Length: 279
Ligand SMILES: Cc1cc2nc3c(=O)[nH]c(=O)nc-3n(C[C@H](O)[C@H](O)[C@H](O)COP(=O)(O)OP(=O)(O)OC[C@H]3O[C@@H](n4cnc5c(N)ncnc54)[C@H](O)[C@@H]3O)c2cc1C
Image (cartoon, rainbow, N blue to C red; front, side):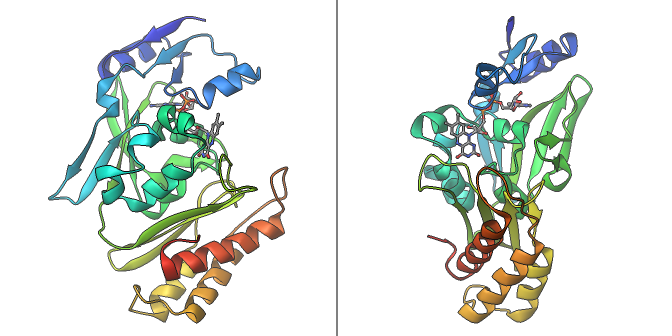
C-alpha cells in the first residue's frame, strides 16, 4: 500500500487532488484498527503526521476564540493553555483511551471517524465549533452542527482535509462527562457536554442518537427556569436532566440498552448543570 507523505497543508491537498482515492492517516488509532480487522482496504494512504501546521494552535484574544490544529494530539489538550481555554475539551481528552492513544490520537481523526461515541464531539456541538477544511479549491468552514450528518458520516468532501477547529473561549462554566462499562479505556455508552455560552445554557449528548444531539427543549427550559446559571438548584437540574433524556434517541446495542442510556443522560445532564462535572 503506497504511503504518500505530506509536509505542508498545500502539499497534502495537492496529493489528495492527484490521488482522490487516498485515505487520510493522522494518528492511525481508528484507521489502523479498521485495516487490521480487514474492515478497510485503503489503496493508498496520505500521511498527515509530518505536517507541523496541523499541530499548531492559537488563541485570538480579540475574538475570544481558540483554533486547534486537526493534528494536535489529545495529550496536548489535557493540561496547559488549551485546557485552561476550553476546560470541557480537556475533560473529554482525558477520557480518551490510554496515554498511548492520547499521544497519537487527534481531534481531526475524531471528526474524520465521526462516531456518535467520539469524545470530543459533544464538546464541539455544545460550543458550536467551526470546522476548517482545505482543498485545492480553497478553504471553507462548516459549523459542527452541519458537519456531522450521521453515524460515522460527515460532510467533508473526498478531496478535503480537516485542518483545524475553532471554539469560543467563554470563561464560563462548562463540563464534559461520559458513562462507560468501566472507568478507563472505554468507549462511552452515554456522554454529555454542558456549557454556558453568551449567558445561554447548552447541552450536547453523545452515544444516544445517530449524531451528537443538542437537547434544545432542556436548554430552553433551563434558560427560562433560572437567570442564575451558576447556582442551579437540584430541583431545576433534575427536571433539566429529565427533559434532556426525553430528547435522547438511544438504541440497544452491544454496549448498552436504550433504557440505561436514557437514564445515564438524565444523571449526566443534571449533575453537569449543578456541578460542571458528573463524577
Ligand atoms: C484502544 C483505543 C481506545 C480508544 N478510545 C477512545 C475513546 O475513549 N474515545 C474516543 O473518542 N475515541 C477513542 N478511540 C478512537 C480514536 O482514538 C479516536 O477517534 C481518535 O480521535 C482518532 O484520531 P487519529 O488521529 O488516530 O485518527 P486516524 O485513525 O488517523 O483517522 C481516523 C479517521 O479520520 C480520518 N482523518 C484523520 N485525520 C483527518 C484529517 N485531518 N482530515 C480528514 N480526515 C481525517 C481518517 O481518514 C480516518 O477515516 C480509541 C481507539 C483505540 C484504538
